[in-house]
Amino acid sequence: MATAEQIRAAIAAAKGRVFTLVASTLPTSEKTLAKRAADAEKRAVDGITFRAQQTLATEEVEGGTISVVRVSGRPDPAWGGGDPIRLSKKGTQSLGFVVSAMEEYGNATACPNAGREGSACEDRKERHSHRAYGLERITSVVVNGEEFVK
Image (cartoon, rainbow, N blue to C red; front, side, top):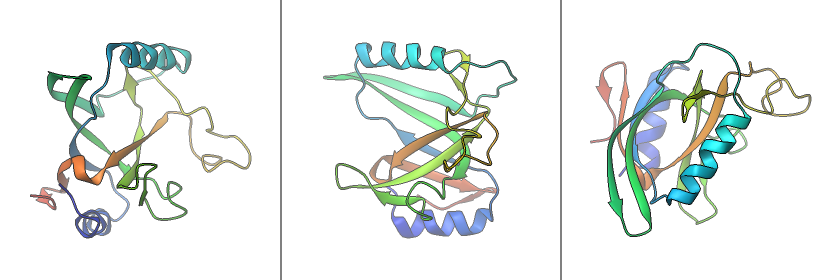
């Protein structure tokens, strides 16, 4: 479990560069996974992708599948009004993360707000995705070989 202080230290050490975290997902049902795959297909674009997110392990539990993922990206400053750490709807702290050239469910995907005037992504290229990771589910953060969450 990561603390806000550990995440802020990692963000400061990254100095705007990409860093890697490992986190577990919440249990996700087959129905939700199918809906996400259909949504990813709707946002599909042509382009080169890289495996910015890799599934390290999965486990079937009551309520669905839990995945442990490794993802590389940058903190999302637009996520919490300038602070990439904010409270989620459930009242827990989450890290907003931007991942470039994301591949989701076999599709190269894009942010629908990229280039949209007045949006937080107005000046961003389309080939990025936004993710939120609950701090309680982040088990590792590595910046330039240095571990910040142990």
